[in-house]
Structure formats: C-alpha cells, structure tokens
Image (cartoon, rainbow, N blue to C red; front, side):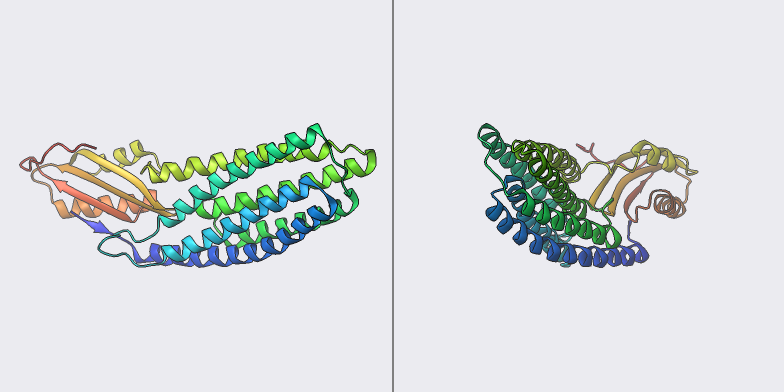
Length: 305
C-alpha cells in the first residue's frame, strides 16, 4: 500500500483557501449593506422586485456566512474519527445554499402571482435609484470574488458567487421594471420581471446542487476521465491489470485516488509504484494516492465496489 501527498500541492491549496476567504469576507460586507438598503427601500416604495431582491440578498448573506464558516471548519485538523478532516463541510454548505436558492425562487414566484392578479402602485423613481445602487454593489462583490477566489473549481465558493450573480440579475430586473412603470405605468412589469429572475436563480441552483451531490456521492471528478487514468496505469511496463480503481473529490481542488495494480511476478514493485505515483500526479494533478501493488500469488476477497 502506498499513501502519497505532495507538500507543494498542500501549500498551493492553503494559499488559494486564504484568497477565497478574503474574497468572501469582502462580498459578505457589501451584501449585508445593500440588503438593508433594498429591504427598507422596498417597504418605502412598495416594490416586490426590491423586496424579493432584498429577501434573496438575506439568503445570500446567510449563504456567504455559511461558506465562510465552512471554510473555517475545513481548516480544522483531521482526527481519529474524521480522518479526512472537515473539508466536506464546504460541500455541505454548497448543497444547503443550492436548496435555499430553490426556496427563494419559489417564494418570489408565489408572491409575483398574487401581485400579477392585483398590481399595486409602486414608487418607481426611488425603486430604480435603489436597484441601481444594488446592482453596482453586486457587481463589486462578484468582481472581488472572481479576483481573489476560485469560483470555477471550488463548489462552495461557486455557490456563493451564483447567489451574488442572482442578486445582480434581481437588481437589473428591478431597474427594468422600475423604468417600465415610470415611463408607461406598466405595474405588471414588477411581478413579471421578478418571475424571470426566479427562473434564472433556479437554473444556477440546479448546477450547484448537481455538482455538490456528485461530490457527496463520491463521483469521479468532472475534469478526470477514469478510463484515461486506467490506460495510463496499464501502460507502465510490468503492469498486467488495473482493478478497484476509484477516483473521488474530498473537497474542491483536492482529489483522491485508490487502486490495485497486478504486476508481473519478476517486476520490481517499488519502481512500478514510483512510476504510477509520478504519472498520476503529473498527468491528472492527483497527489493523494493509495496504490496497492500485487503479484499473482496474492489472493484477496472480491471487493463489493
């Protein structure tokens, strides 16, 4: 058996984690400020588009705080009971954030249907001004997260980022609705645009839920082709067969691999093992590997998975 973890990879992972944390902290501060502005603005102007956006921002503030808490949790060292540490807290946070996005979208649609039947009067001038401030703030939050954080690969950060993008869409929708009401007195624009924003939020939420569930189900990382990994290991001189190959994600940016290599009886096991570790690290960037090298005399029970 061999267990290998490159220190260079750990340092890079830790550095990226610190950048992710600072990006999230800035985004959280901006989000809370704008949420309060939009909430009181929505009450004053009687705008559902603003109130729904403020409600969405409340969940965003919660989701950003949850993402930050999960990052802090993930830094806790492994224990005899939690041998992988608490890295999965980030994936659980992403899953929870995805679910809350679904709930918020449902609430917006429900409220919009009522408003569509009886469109109330809205103070659209103030509404447009507040929504414009909200949009600028959301763009700033998203920019900080993109600059500092890894929104492509880190599913926890991605879920927080999508919450903010959903907010930006909500603010943009509120501006359009406000202008339509201001120029043409089309008060039905408020609920209709709220529903369009809700649909966009649902699309984002589905992507996050799908990704988080895939990781929790120990699915093969999306960027890695398991068959290509198998072919790479079988190409090593002396290797007869590769079996019980498993590749999974511990948390975003930290993948793991385990497998058994059946080698020719006259092969040097250590040199095969070293070559396997090198190829997996260089070609697939997996540094956390557990490889069992076997010869024909070794017998073990058939594994269930």
